[in-house]
Image (cartoon, rainbow, N blue to C red; front, side, top):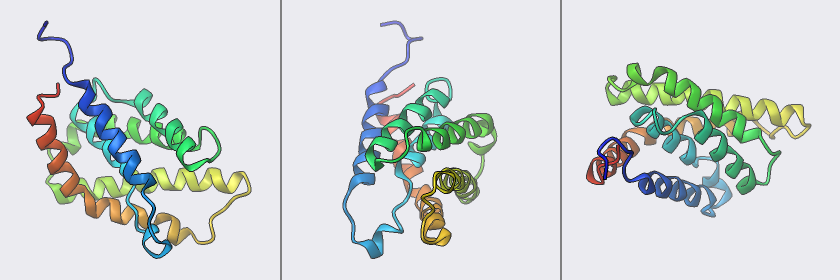
Length: 163
């Protein structure tokens, strides 16, 4: 096998599948509002780690799948995740060298941007959420989850030699 070819792309696909499963996992209403943006977190990680393999196109496809999962307007999450991927790929060289707490703040801002865009599209289509606070709450749980997800994903990437 040529050493310049990308390796173990299956690990990337499986990580997205796990993120979709965690997104679809039924939770009680009281806890469901705190569910992190799993797909966005996995997308941010892979865009930072392998920007030459995971970027805006993967973000768009991931968003289309998420639109199907949530049964929302087609392209709503796709637009948000494509923008999220673009911002992450654009900033990946800076963010990679940040300590984990600064990366968490960056993830907070990126996920807030994603959530605000999805909220805007919902509002434009006449389906605003009951409360903006409940809609933006997952951005904080995503930022708090980031250090653990980053360490686990990095171990998986290095363990499977994903390049």
